[in-house]
Length: 450
Image (cartoon, rainbow, N blue to C red; front, side, top):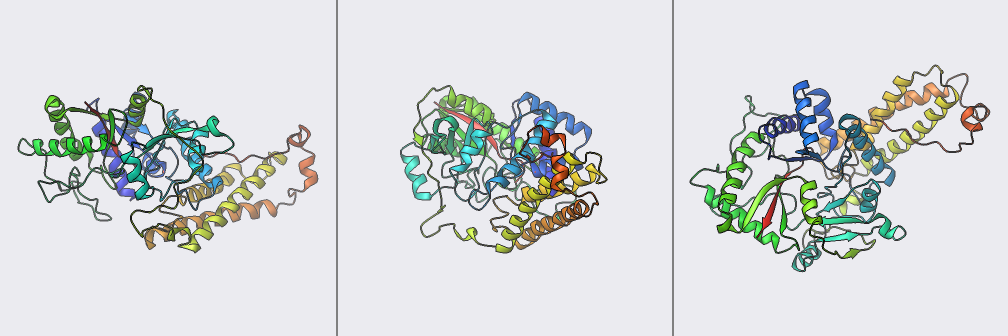
């Protein structure tokens, strides 16, 4: 996955820089940060900064991961959001404004409250009960205002967009071909990618012979989706899992297809354009419609079809869940203790940089395991082992920090803390300090249905 993510961000940055109308959204920060810190050249970083400034590359959610909503703890949700948002603000001076919670297995009413408190303007969800989604599509109720807190009510409400039955992926079926539709770079193969880095074109390329068939298929899907929403603007996600790792192939086929549709807009009845979520939600906002209000009801449990309730992950991989909880508790205890130590002994012998590095490693490990395919246990055994290993190794590092603090001759006795200026100023609370990555999200084509 690290190699896949590196290909995504390198190729996307290069392709976005070629044409001003291209767009891309990046969702989770863990892999982006790994790419930024270990792969991206100075030239690529300069290009990324320019793309972010111009609004052509947009960071969505901004947390380390897209966290699960059923088995995670609120403190840990906030932690992983803080990790990602801190990096984005320190690096680019931006704060995410929209969520993209399209893959967690059900949607909790806590999440829209959290995102509203984080300053988000809109919230996206997808995996809700199949029967309920069908009803919402039929009645054009996929968009609404969600007031997730009974006490805060309208003070922390957020506009919510539910993805339709196609969810966050481009339709994969082509009626005129047995190849996968709209996914021209095929499926990423790791750990053994092609030596030359070029992947085969797994779908029929867009040519003079195929462009009309592709356009007809795309427009039919756009109009099908348009019937489920109240506005004339349709969010048409372009991409899916493990896509855009060879984005030059993607854009080389998307560009002429969109151009053909727009050149024949009178015939098709639609126009299409690349769009970020900012651009899409701005168009929705400008319609000035009134929306239904949803209260503090969850979309849980999630059922994908009859007799398919996704509840097993509430208890699966209980060892990983236990280690994650223990690591979380240890992190917060260590942060509190180290904060007290620094307040009492600012010039003490425990090196600040060394201690912060130990805490930072555990913050990273606790943040990444909140992923909806992490703490849930829905990942492969190899990935579960990776999560556990990261947690255990980081906990061992924090054990070293705790030992260094407790073994000091001038330990954190209550009398020492009370003698500090910190206490005399009347402070009676200690707050957690902040430290500074699923990967590139799908591109969106915003379509006007005439």
